[in-house]
Image (tube, rainbow, N blue to C red; front, side, top):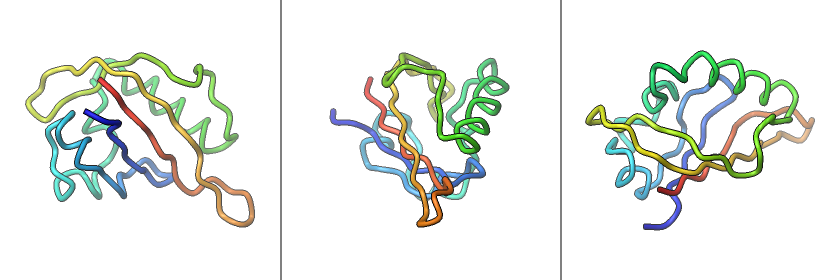
Length: 105
């Protein structure tokens, strides 16, 4: 399986979802798009993710290495172990307007 990709807006709502993300996490694009990233964040990681995501959107800086092992919540409630990388998407003024994520099991 190739990299699963998603894009979230600066508020943490999914705006793009790849076929590989569907295979990895179980949500179809129509189920995922428009939802909060919390649909794929395990409950015990949500507070840390929320603060880290907000900091990343505000500063463009991550405290994480380029690729980090983590866990994601699948549609069926199972936990997927995966590696994730993220990149900020900026508008012409330099503000972060979205975040791309690449995930691999």
